[in-house]
Structures are given as structure tokens and as C-alpha cells.
Length: 341
Image (cartoon, rainbow, N blue to C red; front, side, top):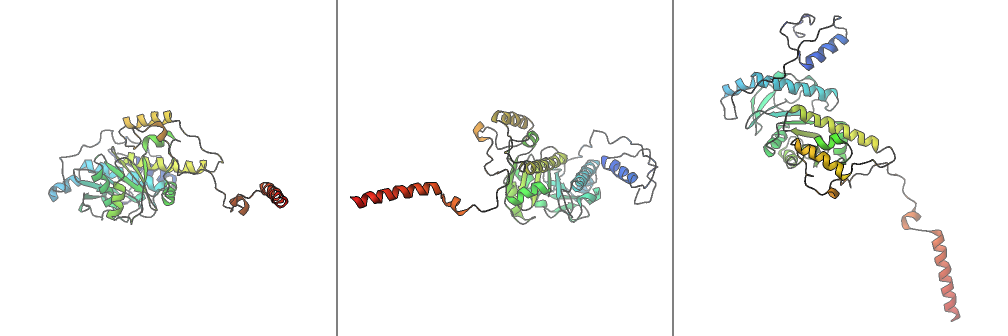
């Protein structure tokens, strides 16, 4: 309606306002584009469109096009656009960075396009690819980092959706090569299981393999000197939630590290209770079955500010003036006795 110059105060009676549409109208009204208040209309029902008949990369072009344009796929496309808007609004992506994918068949996935800001995604921008990265449907070219998403899905059969972005605090940990410590905040323990993948050029098979090697036991991967990628066995929104959780957690850790005291941590029993909840939700974690003494290994984490002033040479070599004087006095006594004998 905006593109066609129509008046947004006169919405069709059968119009359905998605959450992103309502946000747009609030922003539109807040910017003084029109003065009347648009009454909220019923949102889309909880009943989601069901997938049509199963298709795969071996289906005909006509079958793939019909599937790609079905109500089921339209709903997924709108979900991805909504998540893209949230990523952009929270500054988890910059420029045209970040990408997402959703498994929609045995060996096919819906994904975001390349060179498009996640804050301005439209359903018609989406792409359909097979698990080798070949584009099957869509006008725009698929994301250049799709191979990583596909390798995650091939390695982890439970992975339904993946989300990659560059949230500043979590990416800071990735640049430093530090996995955030554990045993501090319940939401992080339950919803995230974090590992660090070494750096490789984004978009290459090598990068995808290093990430995929970790997804059997981790659902949130820090990509060294790059960003974060998460996966969910439920939907794209849950994959996005993990981005919010690790970013908030890393930001909290940075604040806690400046307060001048070691942070408080959970007891082993408290962590065991959280892991039981986590396991009941079907989330992966390498700590299931570990002994209590093995649960909180944060040896790589050093909270607080380290002094940058080099220590005095005397302290570095263990020099002690009083001890030195005592040693000298004893030495003098011994030498005197030797001379007398």
C-alpha cells in the first residue's frame, strides 16, 4: 500500500496485520505520516500453514516452484523477515551481514539472499537451495555463506533452523578466542551450549566443516574473528533467541569483570538441576553425565582488570633486603670463624 501511495488509514476489512506490520504502522504514525490511530486487527491465527506434499532436490521444477510459493513457505519467509528485522534493530548485523536458513525438506532449505540488509528483507527475496548449495528457486542470489548452514544441517539431523550474525559482545569473545565461562546465569545454561570454531575464510567449505564438527554437542558456535552461528531443532525464532541470550550473557560478563571481585557461581548441584531441565527440552550439551567436580571448568576466564605496569625487578627476582642482610651477616660470621681456625 505504501509503495502504491495508498492511505494506510483505510485498510481492507480482511487485512491481517503481522507483528512487523503493526510495528511499521506505529513507526509510520510516530513519524507524523498520519494522525489517526489505526485500530489493531486480529493477528494471524496460531494455526500455521501445513507443508504441502513433500518435495526434494529431485522434484520437478514445477513442483519446486509450487512448493516455493505455497502458503507454508510464505509463512516461513515472513518469519525470516521478522527475525532479520530484529537482528538489524538490535545491531546484531551490519551492512548486509548475517544470514539464516530453515530446513524445509529432506535435502532442501530456505535461506536469505546475499547483499541485502537483514533490516529490509522481503518474502520475495528468499531463496530455495539444495544441500549442495545449488539454487533451485528465487530471484535473488542465495547467501554466500549457505554452505556453513547446510553443513550444520547435514551433520546435525535435528537442526531445523540456523542463524548467523555478528553481535558485538559475543563477537568480542570470538575475536579474543575465549569461550564464555559457565555456572553464572540460568538462561544461558539451559538454552545455550557454546563452543569456539577456529577462523577460516567465511563462505568456504573449511569454515563450514569446522563449525559442523561442533554441532553434535553445541547449539551456539563462536566463529573466531567473525561472529556467532546458532541452530534450533524447533524453529528460526529459537535459533534467534540463542543469539540474544549469548549476547546478553557476554555483555553481563564484561560488566561483572569490572566490579573488582570474582563473580559468584552456581554450586555443582544447582548446575545439575539446570542440566536436567536442559536435557528434558531436548537441547544438546557435552556436560550430561559428567561428575560434579567437572561441571564448572572456567580456567580460561580471568575476571577483573590485570595490572599493565611491569613489576619491579626486585619483586620479579624475589629480592628481599632483610633476608639479604641476614644472609650476609651469617656469611660474615662463617668466614670469620674460618679465618680464626
